[in-house]
Length: 191
Image (tube, rainbow, N blue to C red; front, side, top):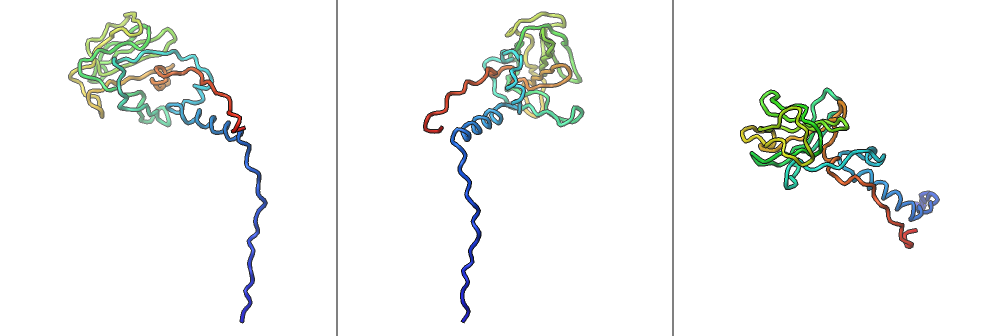
């Protein structure tokens, strides 16, 4: 008869659990980084000087096409957002500025407003645009959604893009609440 030999797996020494306060700080940090739109956590946390703009359509439209920047400037991507719009709906300037372009690009009407800070706000496809050189205020009608044009893949949506210098940025950063978050004290039972 063979004797059974009890095998004992070595058990590593246990480590103490991290203090609840450290867990809470880590959780809040992750929420701040992951919870911000478009992966914009570093810019938003750095206290950017981005102003708060108005939506270009009223009432506040649904976003039907997300901002998807390309990995490299020359690659394809979606350099703006698509907003649900009705044919003929008024398009308003999100910010005060000057109409710097008003015309046709390929087969669709485009309007661009340049802000005092140099940001360029473009929308397409539009019709009945204000002429180049017109000064506009935030919320002012600058065009209408072209009734005939189709914007792929969403049909009658309005494409809204914003450039800072030569870089495209997510337009939603300008209509979101970018004020810093106020962190509440950690409750005593979590310390």
